[in-house]
Length: 91
Image (tube, rainbow, N blue to C red; front, side):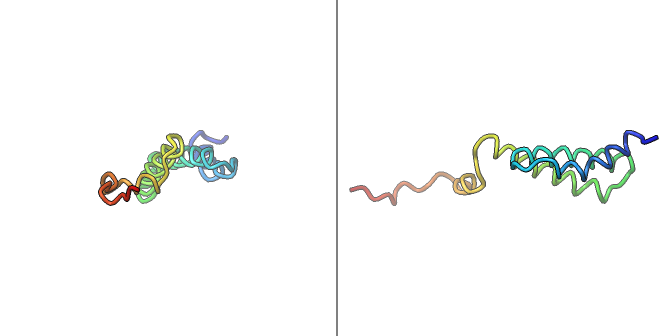
């Protein structure tokens, strides 16, 4: 009989193959990361747990960017503060 933790372990890598849209793929990647985190906690696999915890945060940020409509270019444009309006040439 297959245990629940075995199903989580099988589902983690296979779940990425299901969807193709970026938002769905990001959400699916987060679920996959959660499955790997659960599996690594139960099996005490610290070298697997730490990178997937970091990747889970990155996936969450990317999904948030998609859902809110902000992109990396837009957020990096204002990373150093608001744009300098003194150089704007008016006719």
